[in-house]
Length: 282
Image 1 (tube, rainbow, N blue to C red):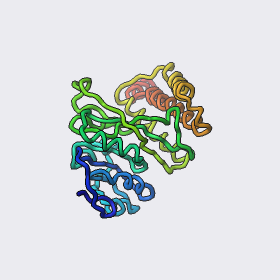
Image 2 (cartoon, rainbow, N blue to C red; image 1 turned 180 degrees about the vertical axis):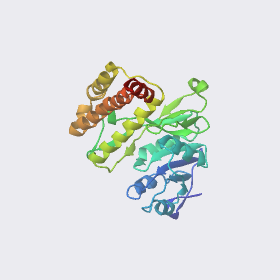
Image 3 (cartoon, rainbow, N blue to C red; image 1 turned 90 degrees about the vertical axis):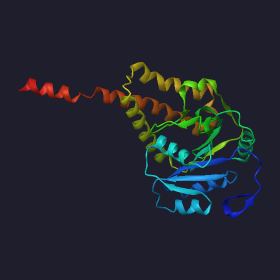
Image 4 (spheres, helix red, strand yellow; image 1 turned 120 degrees about the horizontal axis):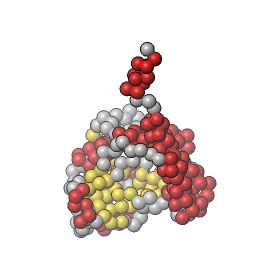
């Protein structure tokens, strides 16, 4: 018997034990649907980075274990949450996501005898009041269910991904796909979405600069064009109407501005160059 949200005890079918992990900060207004959808998990762990809106107490009422951790960046924060989980198999969600009944059934079936290292699931995004079903917004396969002994979150500050713990043997293992959608129901306005994208592109640009990447003019111009052709035309993003058009337009601009920020930073005169110029002026 396992106690779930609401204090109910249910009989659990024999399968691999599963921990759900969520990172959170001031998510009281939207995390309840996420918690509701995770009642089938053996543990729900919320790694909170200092919420002051009642998120922590709300999560505890739903039976979740809440742990405080100062913000480390998206990748490091998620990696920490996975490390703190009780079980090796983890399901990683954001506070504005929820598991559909079909996805739940697919997860439970996969956990009966998991022969793979992890599973991707189709992510369905709500954007401008419409569930995107084409283009870049769907199926948006995300690797969220995995064995932490074999897979782990990268340490990227933004747009983090799941990598092999031992990269040298990654080709010997496989990752499967699940049926059923993971719903992403963001409540942010378009203005908030744009502000977030601006922060994301700055973090991505900083990462590229730190790695010494050079951005050619052809990449600066060609990347957003290829992105539009792939997702709006080939993958038929146009079928999602105006929301689909706005979504890909922002995505293409992100590609452009990310590389433009790199070019702008690399074009700035270095400190030693400025010092040398000043010497000649003396």
